[in-house]
Image (tube, rainbow, N blue to C red; front, side, top):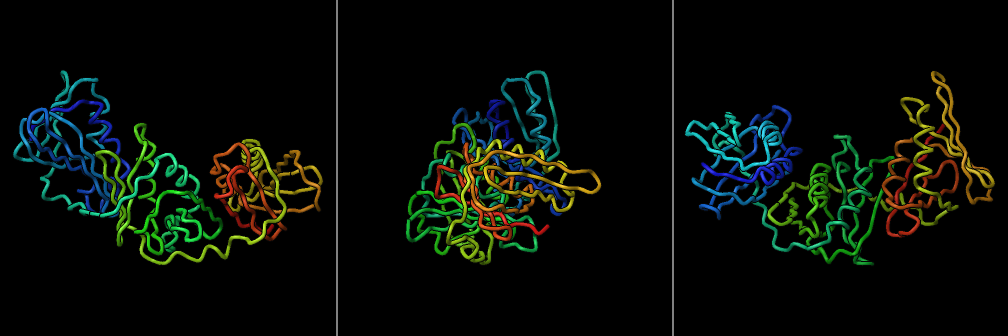
Length: 373
């Protein structure tokens, strides 16, 4: 294997796979990136691939090929080296004993690698029907839901975001919950007939999908599901993921049928007030108390070891005095994820969950369960 490639192109491809390569030592080779060179001369191509056996990514990059071949080397170390190189063309050559020599300008590095046949085969996921969707809309949907997915490994069916097609509206819905909070968003994004009764995309797969659609040249992305696999494609980059098996809980029973009192608050004002008051909340519960009275919302926290905090803000409210307590982090996450200048805050009483949504979007909703003080 012998080829040369633009430093910026090589660095971009290596940067894309860093969050996928396996950090743990269960299979040391999963910390490696697979480099495969095909073609000839200036029409050559370098394929970079990485997997953790659950999520895999493969990208194609133009290069000038003198000799085809393949090799695996440490993904992190190779990325660190390339990142520090001058902005010149990078020349790489593999030796018969699986060492990779890298030259750029007057710098030279040699990395120990392994032969490509030792690398776990990436699942050749082929999904016949892919739906093309705007990257910005998909990125927004992920942003509004992924924070609410559970990180408790014992509740594996909550460790991701549930994607389904709503029969009544034909819209695509993403929904996530960890039992303490819930978030969903609906958007018109094609038919997605392959969804069936819905699929659960794992947190890591969704995080990689978010990185892909956030790239500067991302206008559209192709997305599809089949069986236990999901696939996303953007240009020369293909992301595959193994979906979570299991049944997502009936989240609809948590969504209130009737909305209670409604407040519209500036998002930034509410988030900053919550963060300030949370500084003196109890370490374990992170509890913040919200008290609504005529024309005023009061936020407070109390920590016997540290002290107390209180902040007031004017609101358009003339109902009865009501007190509700929440985990501050859950509330901050939900308000921040609305992505709007104003947030609609709905509530009924001190024991009912709060409903939060962008003031200008009725197809997005977050629910946060209250705490008992």
